Length: 210
Image (cartoon, rainbow, N blue to C red; front, side, top):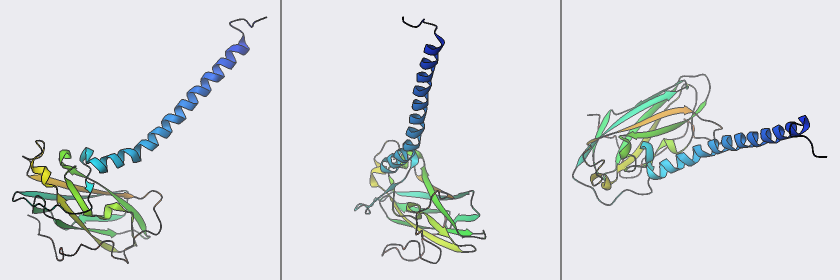
């Protein structure tokens, strides 16, 4: 004889199956959410979406006469560090390679590893603001009481001047925020070593803030 529709054992088995399906769906969604973070970050860095700057292999061959004002912003979250830009702003021609310096001091009692996240404003400039060298490409370990200077080598792609969303904008802000690194890679760069060296041809100090 078939069990009655309201047989408690049948209802229990059905509820158990439903519970397993829901649990599996929940775990899958959590996994997808975690996977989406690096995928989204990679997408942003590749395309410049959401104001994320792009890493470039070489500087453009064309330099325009038009100049842009590049402003610099530095922030720290949950780290015993002071992080500052050594110049408030720079005036560079579109396509010209610029060199800016940032400084970090660890005021804590132990070495701390941080990683800088970055973006530009306006967000539409993200696809054209490109960096050849940057401390943000890797974790940075600062020893207690140490101060480290980091150069950033950048340029604005000449296509900036042709894009309807950017060609009328004469100012771009590059903003960094240092966070404590999660599962930092080893060995990390430390304050005892020079984190980055500016490419040849860009020696000396950048133009002072405007």
